[in-house]
Image (cartoon, rainbow, N blue to C red; front, side):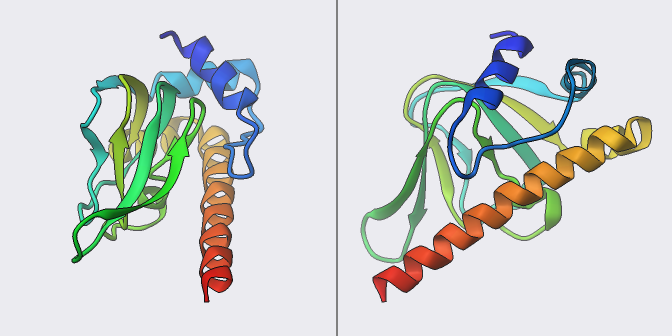
Length: 155
């Protein structure tokens, strides 16, 4: 999967928590130089609950499920993610442990932005880094609000 396909997936994702960065194509190309593509096989965890990982990921192809494991047998699925989704955004803002697992349901193509590369982006292209943080923060806030609404509805 090429980076242009990833950009199309990000820009066409029509969900409330979609990553909506205001970047032009030249800025997207600059950002692409800081991302690392990787493949995740079905059943593999991209993110493990309890781990500390300061990386953020874009899902290019495939599907991922987000679920919380607990002390009781079984787990609780939170959401299925489609291409274009941003994953692990809390890792940009905190060095706390992840609160959920993210598992590949199919073969997935993901693009990682690891903290050292993001720090380099902030030095080389601060406007792009700032816009990335704004858009990632919006995703994080939307997901927090959605989780809080679910808790209120369940009570």
